[in-house]
Amino acid sequence: MLKDILIVQATLTGLTTAFLYYLGVHSIDIYISLYTLIYLATMTMAEPMPRRVRLLNTAIAYSLIAVFTYFAALRIMAILGVG
Image (cartoon, rainbow, N blue to C red; front, side, top):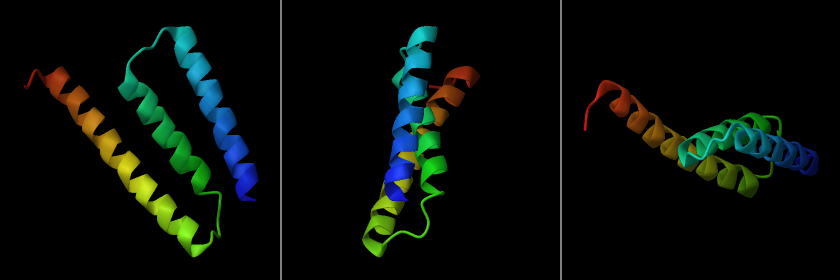
């Protein structure tokens, strides 16, 4: 089951990267934001997971959400003209 999820995740990540490159997007924050969404969406399908894998998944998810929030805050500050 976990192998299937990882294959789906790798496929979606590859397609996203190719599509963003085709569009000419070179901003790392957009890539990280979309990779975060892909990771969180695919890992919700991987239940039940062994305890160690679940703990690692939770740590990765919190880290990605923190980075996503940071980049979103930077974008909002740029739009508002703050900082």
